[in-house]
Structures are given as C-alpha cells and as structure tokens.
Length: 117
Image: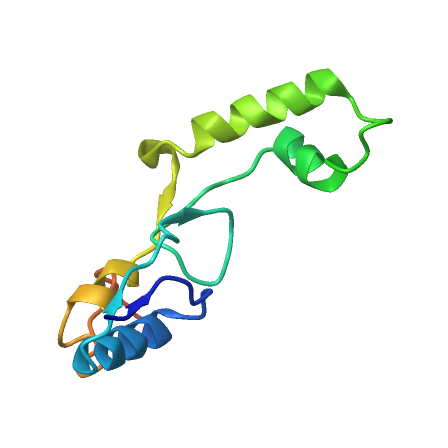
C-alpha cells in the first residue's frame, strides 16, 4: 500500500487535482496543513501578532533576544490558533471534497455590482 503524506502547498485547484489523481490511483493521502500563518492555501489563516513576528525573526538570536517579548509572542500564537480567531479561507475543503470543484464555478459569497446611472 502507498500513502502520500507530504506535498507542500500550492493552490485549491492543485489540491483538487492531486486528490483526484491519488484517489484514482488507489493511493491514500492526507493533508496536515489545516491552519497556517498566511500562506498560499489553507483552511484557516492564523493572524500573527507583532510579538510573534519578533519570535520568527529572532528565534536564532539566543544571546540577544527579549525573553518577555518572546513569551508574549508565543502566548499570542496559542490564542491565534483557536479556530474562532482564525480567518476561514473558502475553497480549501471544497477542493478536497466537492466533486464539482473543478467543473462548476461557485461564488464564495453573494455579491452584487453597484448600479450606475
């Protein structure tokens, strides 16, 4: 048996095509990229705080970093990963589970154009 466990991320269309190909070839697959800081494609986008951005920029500077700011940044991240604090990205789940994803265009939201006179 085969199982595809790591693919990186690309786009919702790529997710759809990859899942269809793997399923058609009877190869198991799964994604672990459910929540992420801003990236190309994910189900939920995690908003990062200035303090967590500091952690990302300075994590190698073990001799010269603000420990209190790092602590705040890590606690900010722990709060940010809660689903209710994430921004939902339409299309991710649909690309993996909607058989009409690549066949029929569907709007993410109802929109209307302003009327001009």
